[in-house]
Image 1 (cartoon, rainbow, N blue to C red):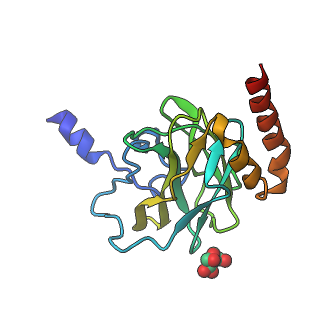
Image 2: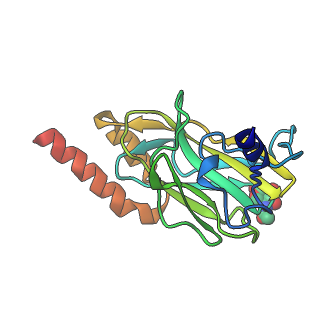
Length: 194
Ligand SMILES: *[C@@H]1O[C@H](CO)[C@@H](O)[C@H](O)[C@H]1NC(C)=O
């Protein structure tokens, strides 16, 4: 009974109760569980955009959450049929921080405070391997009582050795990613020649 009571009292909410970010316990369901506060039933006014449709080992993917400004966020990469956070995130943008998920200190991103984040907040994710198609999933909160669950990006397919052409196409993306992309391509070419 006591345990049940404690669990019931354990209130998680994404902005007010956790102004410094979602707790690790939110990694799987990405749900801010605050008594009487439910996710918005309406379609989320947010779209998760990525700089590429395909990902390559060693090539960071940039992710943005486009829509009205928001205060709270929990952002993870996911694989179909798994419910754990996948890959790792790089240097969190201003007002955000890493959240340990799936045993990885950089497994997810959450807000670091309730300052407004928006279209110009850019998150950077790095794949762990290239076995699975991946998508990005977020809980986005405008205020404690107004949040949307399950905001998803399109699915990104992974590229192994067959991905050279695609990778070259992707280089039309962000200029600063070119050195890393070139490195990844060299790595793949070396693997083929070896
Ligand atoms: C963010 O981008 C969306 C879509 O392009 C636009 O409608 C919205 O006004 C932008 N928000 C801000 C705060 O600039």
